[in-house]
Image 1 (cartoon, rainbow, N blue to C red):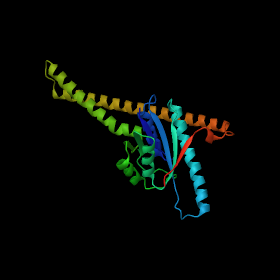
Image 2: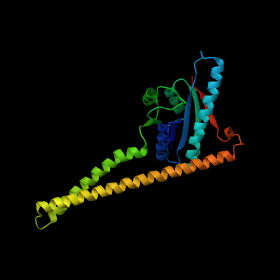
Image 3: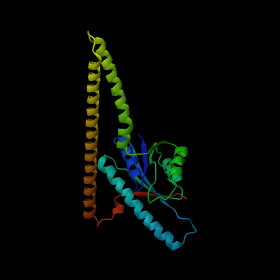
Image 4: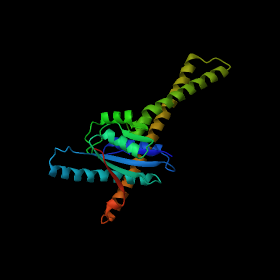
Length: 247
């Protein structure tokens, strides 16, 4: 069993990181922890400003946690743990949560963590990479984009090499010599075939992506209607949010 932690906020980078975590963990045995960290003001700030700031930060943080909680429960048969922290150092807060909950894998977005945590995120990610006592996964771009740019290219190269070997074997088995024009014609036909296959593959990926986005929209609309219907209930009692104060 593995314990997965995802640090989230309201940015697209967090959404990508969260999607990667859901795709990697085993929902049958693994545990999922969702963490957001709010900024602690310095003690020199005015008391009335600190109070209003804390209230706004806490409200926004809980909304983020609820969003990701319902996304997780809507896609996987698990009940994630939601964590909220107060701190002046994002990287140290994540490492503290890792140690406290015995996390084995942490997933982070590469860039800005949005309005909730106005930290230097680049240095925070580096801090986690250097100090976390677990495996660290940093997501730089959306999973579909990554697959189409890198994994897809590797697959194309493998297919081209396999096709080249096939043509060599076929040429060796031909009892008569082909003319240069015939060879060029065969190669051009093969090239056109590969182009067509790649176009079909790209079209299928776009269709799959559209279906996924449509499914997400339906889930979000369903959740929106559910919240409206149950707005008279105390939402805070539905999810047990563990709150930490990392100074």
